[in-house]
Image (tube, rainbow, N blue to C red; front, top):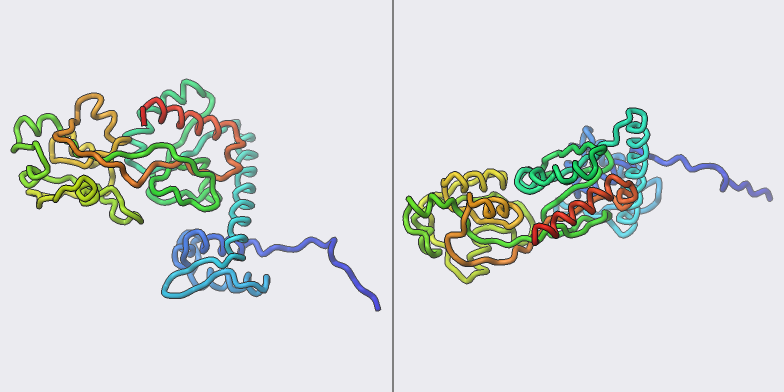
Length: 311
């Protein structure tokens, strides 16, 4: 009997199916994966099905409108994400070497960019004038494989599977307002006085866990939040801070975002009562990204700025 061995023959990997599967696993849904990849949901489903048949393994569990990875699927998703991330990183470096530009692409929330990062960015430029920095402001998680993001600063509980994650800034919550509001407005000396004022609300209710809302602050400080004279909701944190500085109402201050305004006196704390938020700002990037000098230097600079700000 003859036995033919194929061990030296390369395995042709189904890259399109692997990419579709990784997107489904990361985004926890076929619809969101289809939107990201620019294809139909049916096409994504077919790619995942063909991959499962090719491997002879169930990779995803489906039920109740939710998608989760099996242990085998989680292992494969992490490997695919790492592999595609390394490929994208090398390709990008080769392209940039050709053009002579080694740009650093950062992704973060708009409020954090405007209120904390950008005012400090001149410090990094002075240390590394040969590294241009590009900032993308978005509420979406960075897709390190496709959108050429080197490092992201995210806000949440720090759960970013398969990535390098370290805490940048913690957060403390307390009421803030413009000094002029105390001078010309109704009395504002305690929680009950909020009934006579406009409450400025940062719309963070779509976050998991216990986000830093006025209700969370009141509960943690043992207060009862009265019905305000008016509510004004904003979709971005920087708009909340700007509205408070203009005297349009009372905002729930979050230390990284209001620290500079408090220092220059455009915001003040009308009464006592602060609590620690459950949320923080996190440095997030692929593990291999920190081997790139410009990424590692930016990460080190961020941590130094956080220490210098006393947070």
